[in-house]
Structures are given as structure tokens and as C-alpha cells.
Image (cartoon, rainbow, N blue to C red):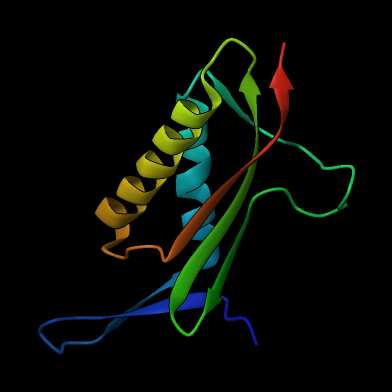
Length: 110
């Protein structure tokens, strides 16, 4: 069963911190908005679901991010840069390192 939050243990044993998966989604959305070559895909034709998804299993975070990329940009560089920025932002802001961040190119921005 998928969890709705991740539990982070405090090194001083004073308690625990629980972060809802919406926190990670918000961080990823902020990173996507900062990049002018990337736009979050609103809906996919194959699946009628929420576009950006984050899931937590066994206290491990996985993210699936469908995007559209500017047609003039190098797709592999943009995707690698986006993946790295999302990983670094989540690690810096929460102290958690995501186990998987998948960037899916759904289309292009013309």
C-alpha cells in the first residue's frame, strides 16, 4: 500500500519529521517553473490522470514527471538538467534523497 508521507528520523532522537508527498510535488513544480525550456504536460492522451505524480513505498520516494520541451532545446541535456535540479532541490530542502526521478517527454513546445 502506498504511503502519503515519508518519516525522517532526527539524529538527536528528539522526534520524527513526516513530510507529505505533496511537499515533493511542490518542490518539483517550482523547479519546472524556473526552466524556460520545460513545461509540465497538462494531460496525456494515453492516461487520464494527474500529471506529476510522486509515490512513497517503504519510505522511498519515486517521482514521475511528464513534460513538454522547447523544440529548439537539446532534449537529453534539458531532461538531465531538470532531473538533477529536482534531485538537488528535494535533497537540500528536506534532507531526503529521492530513489527515482523519471522525466518523460510527452511533447514539444513550438
